[in-house]
Image 1: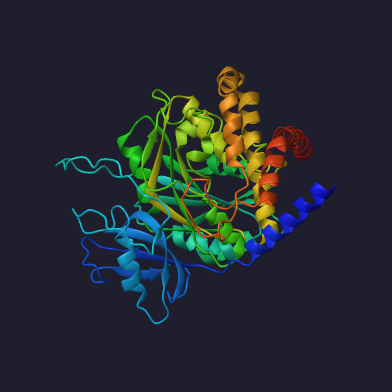
Image 2: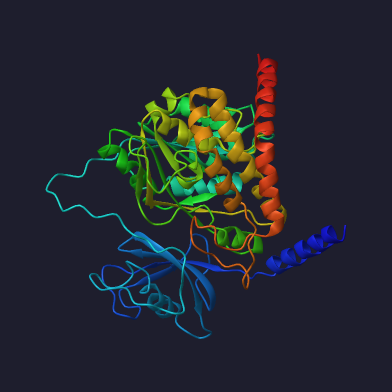
Length: 461
């Protein structure tokens, strides 16, 4: 009993420490094609919807000539020029210095990722192929203000052939329909899906799309203007490509919960482009393809439409809004890879995500992470029993991976946005326990979701 009491007190202290975390500003810094050690030639602007950058802690996306090359967390002293300070710090990132020059170390910067770009092919006289036509599916439920911001960014894309479909999932009011028809008219198509669940909504959108590629994002993102062009370009050059994912960065870091989530790695997978090929399993991924969370996330993913339809879309008993709590995107990734198609991670395809704001939201999210992981694995075995031997072969390594993924870590001085997809940053014991409980619950949640879905469908006939 005494041990349990100490653990509870420790959890309360840990939680209080995280809740004292201060806000972090969001900014973008484009270094252009050169660099002179100051801010000349560099352009600093606030993140989407953020106020101008001032003194204090700043999370910076560093670009070179428009292309993301890394992130850093910098401190701007009172009275200093933010552009000059952050430009100097950005030169310490690989790819952040002048063209052809080695990177300089800048002690004031905390790099969030040290990118190692893939080799750039030699220039060719062959024309760059046009990106394929694309339909974007946005599933939503009773969040018209967030949805409007997302749709505005989708309609500002530089892709030449975009079709936008909003799927109103189990609506309680007519607000979403009214927003789409009043503000967007024929530019956005509205579809209603009465059965709740993210995968159900995505499948409804998949049935309605017209593009050669179908992209999915959430109603709480703001898409970079080049998002769809970058995300769909690999499909034009690789006929075996079945899926592409992109970079997800925080649109706000105003609350302790938002900062803590980004400290844990957030949704981003770094700045190194990578192709996953089931015919050549990656040597550094011994659990491939079952560590699907490393491939990307559902807020920034695209599939060749015919391929996703051929594998049956997403399992409708997975995803937010069901008892499974998540896993619909991971299921889609592995199903496409299991059919022999490649998956491409493209960090130049960027969306900004509005993280949940409260500690309670973070607790729900941590449980959902764990539940979604084991729910999607259960879904794979139910729908593709032939995958069982491969899963059992990787089970010992998978258990070790799960322990590391959900391990509690000390703050080491507090939370700060950190390395993407590297679980080396603070993660409170409370959230660790919830994530592990979620993993135990996931298979049960998935089976309950299947039973509920059968009941709902019988009732709608």
